[in-house]
Image (tube, rainbow, N blue to C red; front, side, top):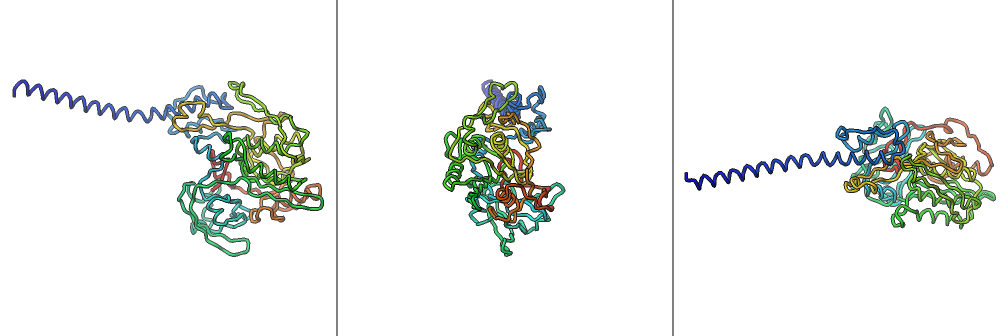
Length: 449
């Protein structure tokens, strides 16, 4: 072999070695990129929590983020467990869609009566269930050819109908109020939910009683600025004003909360005229963010000037539902009927806009960041608001049925001027499993299947 050939072989060999080493290095870098990116996001979560979390003094000073297997595991590992049942992670798009009612799923809720019969609680009009004609009061006998009893667990029920992914199909056998049975098979789809399930007016003597079933404090998708107001709310109060109501029952029994801006919109319609310009609430952040503390005042809307308000509640009434109660109590008589509320006197807002790493990785962090006090300074009700009149849910009856227990209790109070005790187990029955127990994070605020 001549010197030239030997030199060429050596050059080729060197090129191959360099290429192989370069490829190996790229593989090493690629392998390291994923955990490095994951750890960067985890660190961003922890740093954002240290900055904004309401209970920031309860967080560890430092953590090794690589020891946590996921973002959710990290968040769950550092939150203030004795009080925090709500901080969560999602995506920016999912957060916006949830707060504007852009859902995916079958589009209904269900729950148990005192005999542990499962009933449809509510149905969204434009959802697959709504389009199929489902109604509150339908009893569910079977799910995917299995009786309800087979889904019972030690802690509640696991109905195994899958995630809210479009295209997923389930079959349901119902017993209808007239005694007939029907089997319905529907898939899960994207749909726009309605927050107002019913608005109507009943008359009794000189009483014109408005009844409003309001299921979530959601903004209209095309409202500006985003998440700011609900067109459904304006339509509802315009309707009640046109009917000249002098009593109002708001049914929040399944309302897990939502937008504070929409809550303010409703409060401004409900508050008596004399409270115009008065203090609505103050909110308090952690000591690092004391400069974010602020207050809101009433700007009276519409012509309603009610001296009192009846609100139907349950353990599924949370967050913005409780804010509505707390804010109004210093200004008017608020009578709660049903079961005690959930107990969430604190609030959240998304933090990705304050952290580039979260924003660029489409991670939306929504931890508890503030508490809200009413005019009298009441800011803690972690055990919920107690009711004035106890009445169990009656899911076998449709909305507005005069024999439905909670609605009847409110009507009886209005007509007689005092609470009426109907006696029996049905007054105080509280199911050991409720729909709100089946959801976590973002979906806990807007639970639906």
